[in-house]
Image (tube, rainbow, N blue to C red; front, side, top):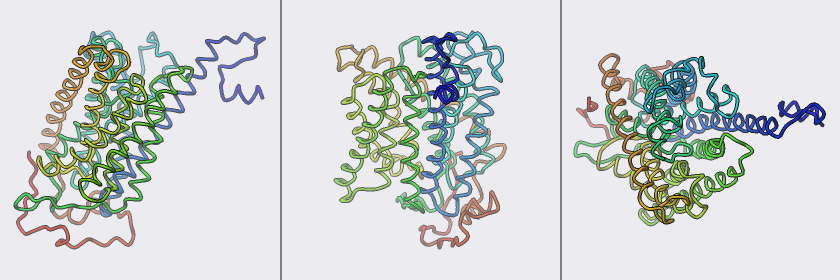
Length: 446
């Protein structure tokens, strides 16, 4: 039995050979963080399935290619550049200046071995970037997406991490609370998705000449459901794993608040759409679960179980309202609802900590100080992400172009961008079914 345990937990040794509580705890913490990193990696399968299910069959190879590219390029760039900018220290409160390629940071104490910590942070980085894929789906050039992903994973996201999670960052010093990334991860991803979807323009046939909205249904809700459940499972690595310690008793509370918020998000979205439209909307229910998960991510270790239910229900209601706002009022075409799920619910969840944190929240007698700090962090990350994202997209558009041609979009990006189809029996939907009229503009807001 000991040989088996020593293989699984290499830090455990026989009592006669000098085991210590510290060495055993370090081994458990390391294994815990690695398992959670694997769960977060599994979330990329979830994102792939959600985006594939919510888009059309002629673009599925492109969706899958982008998700494979995101996690791979994101890991490499976070190794070479991003990790140093995020955790390199010695640069005051704005940016790290060492640790590139994991060199020169042996003096930093992460509580677990450096490589285990890097892996956990790397899959987080890729998560922030992959959010953009769904919002810009079905009309974006693959090369443009590659460059935008590189900017997010190498620069935009790591610097936000430095502000909040490095310990020396200016938001951390103010007391900003974002335990697992409602703003750091999902805010960066959601606001990057916003600027990308706005500048690339809407899909052909999405809006009529008079501005009327035409639904473009996804091709496989079963895939979307599977993807949502995979993401839900992965979130139990995302949130509890951010404790970086399997020996921390708070991981039980964190897992509980995560579960309750997601469940409440489902119920909130279901009831709201049922009352509003006469029938419960499956796509909104799926996104309601994700909205609840995103919303609780900031305060999963700070709020009570009851507080997590409140956050989840409100996110489930905010989600369809936000989707309708971007779709019908602002006319920004987001095929999977990524802006609303990650940007809007992420901002709400971060602000909710200022109200519902058991220690320091306004509703617990803590005054307005924490709420002001939370608001400051949300606005700062919003401004940083939109600003750099806008500049990056404008440069990309000038060099390579953001959008595929009219003909390629109609045929499908699978053929035009990758020379293959996801389904051998694929049949192109007639143009009239999209409501596309002659002379319809495909120009983005460049």
